[in-house]
Every structure is written in C-alpha cells, then in structure tokens.
Image 1 (cartoon, rainbow over the protein chains, first blue to last red):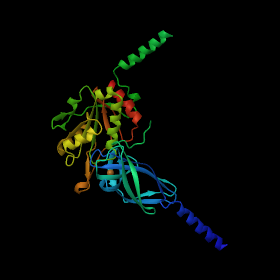
Image 2 (image 1 turned 90 degrees about the horizontal axis):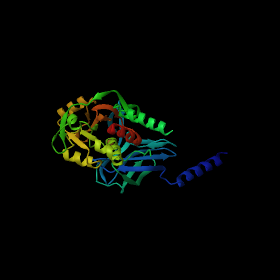
Image 3 (image 1 turned 90 degrees about the vertical axis):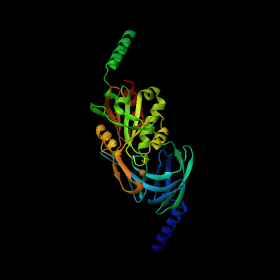
Image 4 (image 1 turned 120 degrees about the vertical axis):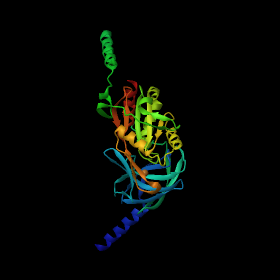
Amino acid sequence: MKKPTLILLVALVAASCGNGSAGVELSDARVSEPAGPNAAMYFKATSDEGDRLLSASTEEAAAVELHETQMTDGVMSMTSVDSLEVPAGGELVLEPGGFHLMLIDAEPFAEGSEIEVTLVWENAGEQTYSVEVVAPGDTMEHDH
Amino acid sequence: MRRAALLLALVVLLAACGGALATDELQGVVVDPPQPKPSFTLTDTSGDPYDFALATEGKAALLYFGYLNCPDICPVHLAQIAEVFDQVPDVARNTEVVFVSVDPQRDTPDAIREYLDKFDSSFVGLTGTLEELKAAQEAAGVPLAQYVGDGEDYTVDHAGWVIAFAPDGLNHAIYPFGVRQSAWLNDLQIIATQ
Ligand SMILES: [Cu+2]
C-alpha cells in the first residue's frame, strides 16, 4: 500500500513540474506612460500553488518599488511594502488606488510601446515580461 | 398628441431654466448645501499670479491638489477629465481645471506645465510657497498635505478628491478616487452647461 502512494506522489510532482515552472500567470499587465518622474505598473497574477512577489526591476527606470496606495477619509497616502502575495488558487490584483509597482525616475517610454520588466517570485523565480505602455492615467479598467 | 408632447417639452424646458443645478442627477458626492468658492491666490506655470475665485468667475471649475511624483491616482483623475474634454467641447470651453501642486520643493513650474500638457494643455497648474499653499488648502477645506519620509524619496499625503464648482460659483459635488468614467461624463456636462 505504501509503494503505490509514493509512486502517485512522484507522478504528481513530476506533473506539476511539467506544467511549466513559471507557476504564476500574469494578465492585464500595463504600465503608464510617465507624466511626471515616475510611472506605475499594474497587473493581475494567479498561481495554483501560491507565490510571492519579492522585487522587480527594469532597465527603463532607476528603481522599481512595491507600493500600496491607501485612502483614509479620502486622504491618499503611498507606502512601500516588502512583498505581494498571490494566494494559492487566488488572485493578486494591482490597480490604481491599491497596489502598484512604482517605476522611479522612469525613462520617457511612450504609449503604444512595450517595456521589459523582470519580476522576482519566491517560487517561480525570475521572470521577464513584456508590458504594454498605456496613456498616462489610462490605467483603470474601462467601463464602456 | 402633438400638443401633449409640446406641453411636455415646455415643462422640461421650464424646469431646466429654473436655474437650480440638477444635483439630483449628479453621480458624484453631492455637497448639500452647496459651498461657496474659496478665495486664494497662487502662481501659475507662467509665473503670473492666479486668483482662483476671479479667474474662474462665471465658469465651472475643477480644483485638485496633488503632486507630480504621484504616479497612481493623480494621473487617473486628470486623464478622466481630459477624456470628457475630448468628447464634449462645450464642457472643455466652460470648465477650468486647476491643479495645485502641493510639492513646491520638487515640482517646478516648468515640470508642472509639462506634466499637465500630457493630459490637456488647457489645464491650469499652480504652485506657491508652503505658506501660500497652506492658505489655499485651508480656504478650500481640504486636509493639509503631509510630507512623509526623508531624503529625496518622501511622499506627500494629500486629499484624493476633486472639488467641482458650477458657474454659479458654488461647490455642488466632490469626486473621490474611483469615480467611473461614465459618471465624470454625466456630471461635467451638468455642471458646466447649467
Ligand atoms: Cu507609488
């Protein structure tokens, strides 16, 4: 009885590895054309096993920080966070007014182009993504 | 049948001419009773004094306090308003958008101009000394901006809402972050054209 369980386990592990080691699915990735010195990047991420975004970098900015915008009685404040969690089977959402990646001292990349951004995940490791540049402020999901 | 329609049209017209803003149709946060326009003077991006009450007299005005290093919600507000300006020229003609930078240490007049031009070159940008900015924020009734952190990378906590004044000189509604584009489109037409 013990042996088949072990075989099953090995098979499961092998199967999950075979699914592509990335493990994190990114969607709706977009970065704003910088209007001021900085730009903001947003996306949605899902992962079956769960993962954690530890850091990010790009050649198009001096630094990339993980930020959270908070509203307290309508007053907006922005703080950096150490990491962002993708819950197992759930979704991490970065959107205006919530979490964002802040590209500090961004290059003047323009709407319609794409930039490469590298994200470092706790489990999936380093992954580089091509991210669409949208008009400044055109980062909300449209309601029309 | 035609007469009834005519009568209805007349009633609608009369109601519209009644002078009162149709605040019941506004989708923003309605300010009741409407509040008077604040009086303050700051400096525009050409270096000229800008008396807010005087410069916006008889026009609709959208007043917003923000800063250029903010990449998240400030650009969204401005982009949403600019989109309505593109769609409805009447609104653009009758509405003054006034962006006050509360970060005079980093935001130079030239940088503010360049920033606003990314959205709409008609947007007015203002700056001033910390004292002048404090007076303007107090007059407008927003919490004073707070400078958090040290070194070059400080952030500025600031009011996240846009204050809307109709041509009657009164603040009828405010717009916190997260207002839908369709609400902006609806409200700016009511505010600017009545
Ligand atoms: Cu930020």
